Image (cartoon, rainbow, N blue to C red; front, side, top):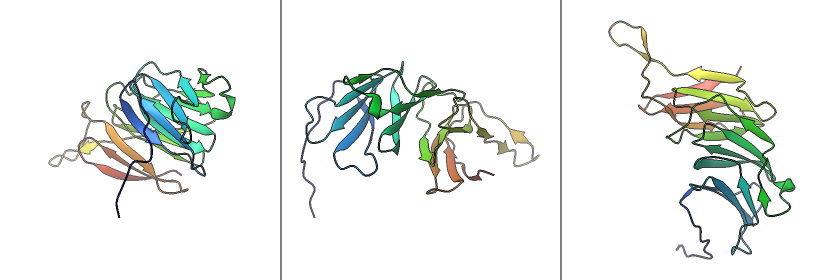
Length: 188
């Protein structure tokens, strides 16, 4: 088996993430260091089908909720929910929802979507869970280290959540932090 290029998309800024939507073989979303998200139709890649503008810093993640709804994460401390059906003039500069509460200014802290729930990490060593209908977190979980000698919990401000992932369409979430601690979390 070999891999060969079947197309090229030229961008002006660094690409930080890419994502195919479910149930589409022709679409692609790209998150960029220039603060934008670009949606392409792979049958015609000369210009983006739509540009999503609303973040003030690098777009670190893009994930599809469904084939026409996208969530983006940025180092501007926000997540944004986009309705791609409203992009009629090649530019969409008003997201459907902006989510705040977590801290994300320099690290990529993870993003995962499941059944309307959005999980992200934070540079406060916490996992935050949002629901697409509400701008503030519905749940959070703080990672703490336990002192091996005395057994009390330690808080290290230099740690951050580096990855999150829902297990399928379940209420189970796995999260990992920057020091290698991995927790299996259950939403109850």
